[in-house]
Image 1 (cartoon, helix red, strand yellow):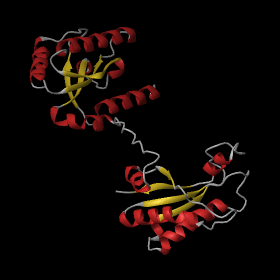
Image 2 (cartoon, one colour):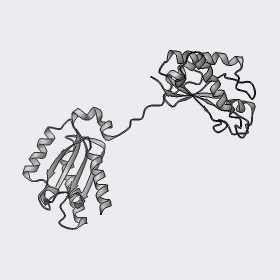
Image 3 (cartoon, helix red, strand yellow):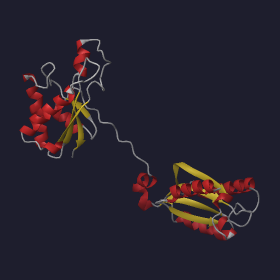
Image 4 (cartoon, helix red, strand yellow):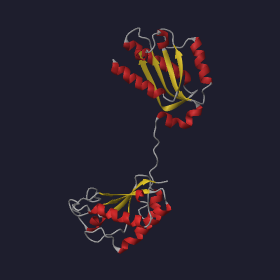
Length: 273
C-alpha cells in the first residue's frame, strides 16, 4: 500500500510541477457535471482557448468496488475531454489518467469526486519543453574531414575529439619530426586566438599489445610542452595517454595504413565559447 501511495505521489508531482490546474467536481456516482460545475467548465474553456492541455486525471471516493470506481473515474475524464475537445489546444502526447479511488486524498468524500485538467497557460508555452523536462535534440554538427584545423575547432562542441593530422614522431620516442611543425603552430595559433579554449591532448600508439613505456602519454606531453613554451597557460592543456586501448583498427593491424591511423594524437575540446 505504501509503495502504491509513493508511485501515486510521484505521478501527481510529475504532472503538476510547473503547470496549472483546473478542478471540477462531480455529484455522487455521476460522471457528468451538474449545472454549476458545467458552467464553471465552460467559463474555464472561454478563458483558456490559447492554453494547452497536458493531461486530465479523474478520481472517485472510496464508496463501491475498486473496479467500478476505476471505470467511473475514466468516464469522468472522458466527459471533460469531450467538452474541451476542439476548443482548447491539447498536446499530441495528451494523457488520460484514471486514478479511481486511489486518487482519494481528502477526508471529505465530495472533494474526491473530481477531474483535474493539467495545462500550460499561454504565458508559459515558450517554456513548454523546459517545464515538462523534455530535452530538445540538438542537430549534430558534421565536421568535414578535410576542413582546416581551425575550422574543425570552431565547429566542434565540448567533448568532440579531433585528430591532429601530420603529427609524427621519431620511432619509439616522443620527439616530433620536422613535418609536424605546421600542425603544431596551427594548434598554437588556435589556442592564442581562443583564450577560453581548453583541450586535452590524447596520445595513441599502434602495433603492440601494451604501452609498456607509456609512450602515448609522453607524446601528448611533448605537444603540451610546445604550447606552454610558446605562452599557452598550462591549466588550459591536459594530457592523457591511451596506449593501444582505443584503436581505430584492430591490433595487430592488417596494413601499414591501419597502423598509421592507430598511431595518432587527438585533442578533445574540454571547454570553449
